[in-house]
Image (cartoon, each protein chain N blue to C red):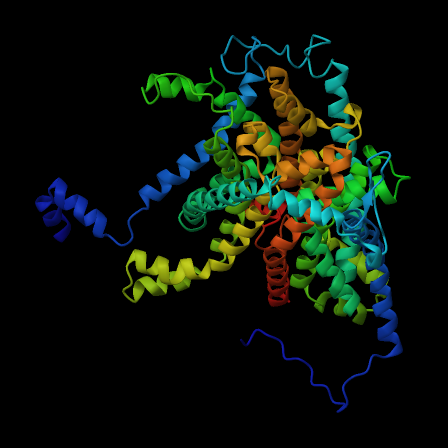
Length: 318
Length: 306
């Protein structure tokens, strides 16, 4: 407390209006931000608006290609109606896919947390002198390309791969299983394997920042290991758990490549696969635009929560 | 004395019980679990790298060591087959150009938004974080549409991929620089101003040197992210010529193709990222040498964006 320098007292009674000099300095700093702001306007906000324009547009009757409509008052609902019929009615097909996406992602997120939390907890709290080693090993997958990590499992899971060989030798299965031929288990494990490095780093950062003295105090005051963990560590790491889950949950929902690489079968299709496929067919592109807006709306709450939380934590640093 | 007595009456059962009761015992189970996790997360990749040196055509049964998938054949070696080469070159081209652009825009943006307190800067800080959390698929679709419908003067392919990658990565340097500026505080600049520095001088002589570790760490991160990027490069590639390694591996495997040459290609990607990480780690340690709190773990955490 004594370390914080006292703020110099403002003598003038009126709130300090910005002087010309201060305003000039402020404009100077603004000049730094301007390129980035322009970049974000033209290469983020405008592209995002284009999705709306394509979604509210119509199809060119000759080329069957999407024609965007830029004026929001002239947007048509035709593409939205088409997507509505994908959800409801005789030609609907998206319902089960959406359900599957949610189930896969929820199971994968929970599994990731159950695996990542204990490991991150150990490295943050008990690694001691070997912390550098553990940290390096824990961070390594984060630096390894996603495609490389999927490829590694494609090798292992092949019909004549090591996993099948091991399972047959251990008599767990009698004949090799075609793991890559559309198995839900494979896709969920692929998602876990793919996204866990991001989760574990966030958890580690959160757990590492917990004041050790609080834990020691808990123990000194007679709490058992479990009690200390539940009342102190778990509670203090809750923000990290939420951030970490969001940071894996959001990309998992839009994932199409894990599924495509490890299964490639419609039996395991997720919402991302539908959008990706629609993008490849010109006449379906506008439906793809509607569907990605649908996804964005569903994810808006977690996204805004994340943005709000990150601003909040930046404020606390300042 | 008591120690001797204790050891005399200790049977294996009581020993186990007292081990369990010891509140400061080593968390053996937790450590075993952590090792199991690390093995699970790393060993498959090691196996995949090993198979890139397989002498046979299989990526699941070992037939002796060879570098034939890297050098020696114009059809099978990744360095000599023009298709593979083009993927390698495209990855490096995208990563290098995107990293340079990202850093120029991102660092200035981070500094600008931190110091320029206004409604506009707060809004664009929000926009920047938003651009970083939305699923990459939605982001990629937005770019796909903007380049096919509005900015049609930008063709799909290298330039579209670069613009996409830069936007996707701007938040790395911006967030890291922002956080670093927050922890530096205004004191140093004020001191520099008191000693007669102009704004620009204090920026160049005081602030930038203090920001160097953050700038360096984010460069490395952005480079590695660009090397590994898949979704943006995939959605914005126009033809096989503009497919970087990640997209090439994806399209080959999902066409049911695999084989040691893909492992070789993936191992190269791994090498690029790990070289970036190593350069980042050593460089970061060198820049922050002599600083308080600068250790190996801290350097590792910084180049990972923690």
